[in-house]
Image (cartoon, rainbow, N blue to C red; front, side):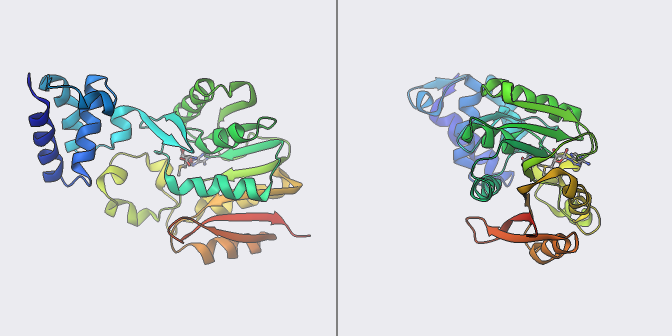
Length: 274
Ligand SMILES: C[S@@+](CC[C@H](N)C(=O)[O-])C[C@H]1O[C@@H](n2cnc3c(N)ncnc32)[C@H](O)[C@@H]1O
């Protein structure tokens, strides 16, 4: 056992040396997670067993994302289980939830393509108690994890998850189609921060040579998927606004871009042309 203050100082120094941003905050979170305490409970602890902290700390020093170590991440005020089979939900993606609710305030049927943890679909179902939805992911592990998140959030009765490629196995029409597809240019993945490039799944990042491969595939399916007054809301990366909206126009859709909190065009909202 060592004093809690010493454990915090040593963990902070190791995380800082490893290049982790916000090392003190993360050290506190790791120590609390290792000891099964909340951060508030940790404040009251005087001494800690460093052997319990070390395995988690070593993983973070190797730049594994904190969310994979704790297995949890908050999104839209809800708690999601995450695993190395899924992208860790990003605050920027909350822009899609807002844009979707603004475009279709009362959706009945929602389709989430590339669902990962299910965070987009489940946040929308949480907001709209009369809606139901389907989430699809290429990864069966991600689809299973999303189904577990639906159960944990009390939404399983209105959400179904399946493994497959985009909408290949999906029939019918939807009021909302939402997607945060992989959109990083393949050559750029190696230069991403280690937490992303080394630990998050390639299928969640790799958008092909130009980063746009998934948009072509999804846009091609939209004419049959989108109900007459429906909208599709897709996430895009910095610098992709023109390409993503040109592709939408080429596919015959009207397209409006919505910015995230940093002012970067983050969501493309597509509708049938009137
Ligand atoms: C950027 S992640 C988004 C995950 C989640 N929707 C979110 O916003 O956190 C993209 C997801 O698309 C999935 N994916 C990649 N290619 C796919 C395909 N052909 N069909 C279905 N899902 C695919 C990946 O497995 C990954 O879960």
